[in-house]
Length: 278
Image: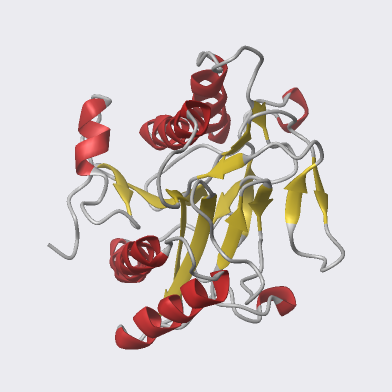
């Protein structure tokens, strides 16, 4: 069952989303050469505490940290620790969440550590982020879930990969519903699958965490012995971007973007819904 939210509940999710945005700003600034991923986790804990929010990752299924820190070939669910020291030229996906009064926010972004990144890595992150926004723009009243998947996949497939070849759209992980829990129905593929059909119709109150994950090579992954860390099977580096989005009567509201998605959606010809907290 898909959980449909009231405007009041969406406003509460917006509060949680803004906390996630604050965590992103702080951890992104702290992702510098010489920092450990545990350092970033501590920064996230402090921001959550400052805002009176609870972490939704810590303890989830036994996960031992506040955020996920996935470096280079790690696609998702990387565990912060003292051994992983960020180096100049690394890329890192920082996935964070927050709970306010029982309502969840969840978002991820890819950060560049230091300088001197290869153009193909810069383009990888851009393609992944822009495919996310294409999916967000497809969150329109009357569309179906598959329209979001199609928008994400179509954008990625149309982008030439520097050096040739194709980008790998990660197959085993995708987006999800969000609300009173972090992961809820429906599961959102980042590509179109005939087996899954069209999926539910998008209506006001529908909330999704839209999160494409893209690699420079394979779409396939494996999980390490810690039972959390997910890497590409061919060792190619990957990017991960995510926003939590609510569909309202007036269009999509990007709950975890500081401006509610207004600027980016305008570039795509879509008007973002008014911010209920403005």
